Length: 46
Image (cartoon, rainbow, N blue to C red; front, side, top):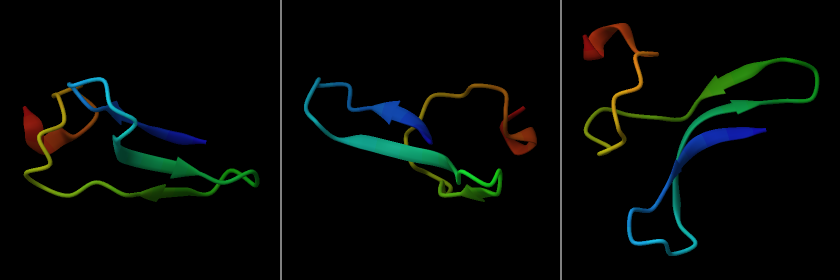
């Protein structure tokens, strides 16, 4: 499963944040300065 944010202009683009594999492992895909909205999941955003 990919967790992320759709492009503001509605095109078929996205900014991925987290990738969860079927075995439950998680991979953080984000980086600083991505333009993604603040959602409170990153402690450095507060």
